[in-house]
Length: 392
Ligand SMILES: Cc1ncc(COP(=O)(O)O)c(C=O)c1O
Image (tube, rainbow, N blue to C red; front, side):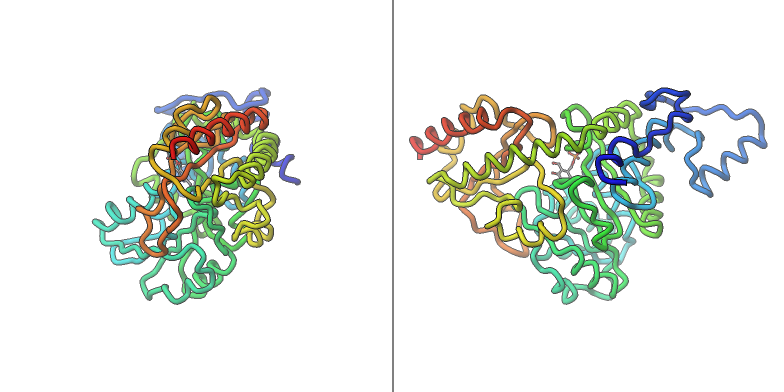
């Protein structure tokens, strides 16, 4: 099935839902068993066979299964674990692949809180992290140690937008017996399928494009049959549970992911090209642009680009960026991205880098290009850049 069909049909199961199209919100803690034999059978099916049967609320209800099946179909994996946030999806993926004494490799372009998890919490449990140049490709082989069990990628990085060579990294890691996890949030499983590129785990902060409406937090980890087992165990042991209401919102958002992303891409490309024409702008960080350093890899491995891009100014100052941002009418200032609306964030990524310094002038800005008319967005940014220029 083609992507648009998968987006609409994945996980749809009208028989399971007594005929209704969308699986309703099934809230549960306790599930009642008819007999001791029925309880034992449920023990076996839920715990040993890992079948999706009603067992206990924390282990999921039909609302969760619908989302899991839809994401599994899109990402092309064996199964999907849900997490209560995108960050939890990143940490569960890591926890599922390590034990005390292990070593992991993490891209220097990784989302800040994922970095902090590795350098803080994970370190205190005896797991060592080495950060690597996101453009290292096959060279990652030189950093693999006998105890390296995981290479964590984020492509493109959600602040600096380097595109990683996942097939080359996966080939090197697998030769060594290490697994590969990719934070695929920028592309979503619609525009990139890391598992088909050789990764073992594909992570989405579903909070962004899957939910798509800035009103719920959720994460997903889809894996190969072998790799997902560790993640299921980690999430289960921790006691993770995802609200069925949020799972419902995520599935509801997912059904329009294809059309939303197509429009995000169209609008973002228009805004990106306009930004490139501006004298204040040094670089627009957006792999779909032909002169972006990651363009060739993006073209090889992705089928589209989402709405998130970075802007590096030729010359900048805190005051000039504040003047730009504070007066914007269509780009509210806030964390996250991937909703239907445009958004702006400040970007000073250099402080989070340890393997490959980020040397562009700071602060820059990061824009999420929403579904508004791009001409209105450009007009708003045009006024903002005039304020920037006057304040610089
Ligand atoms: C690339 C990336 N991964 C993970 C996350 C974390 O997602 P959440 O906010 O749902 O924890 C974010 C959030 O900004 C992100 O940008």
